[in-house]
Image 1 (cartoon, rainbow, N blue to C red):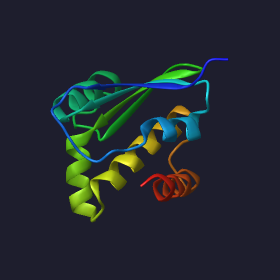
Image 2: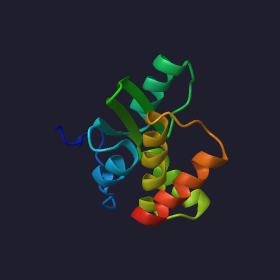
Image 3: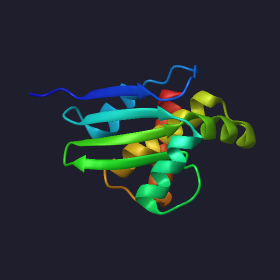
Image 4: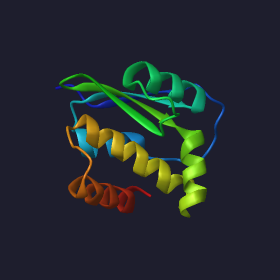
Length: 127
């Protein structure tokens, strides 16, 4: 049986709080999911958002399903830091929420109250 893995690549110089990405991914996506996480900044997030969603802003998180049991998340740490300050959260809480949000999209959830409730539960558990 294949175990879940999260491969991580940083495209920006960023140091920050430790977030248990693999544990969150395993909780949301299951043990057999292969996830690639790209930790990026505004430039790459804007370019990806423009290319794949035809939007001109730097998204805070983007999720791309690649198959039934694999996908990729682009997590914009620069946007997360701005939003954490703006909304009065710690950077760890904001990164946990955004990563959880991306995983839930890969699981097939859409925006709404059920997704928001699940995000709150995950932030509480992993922050």
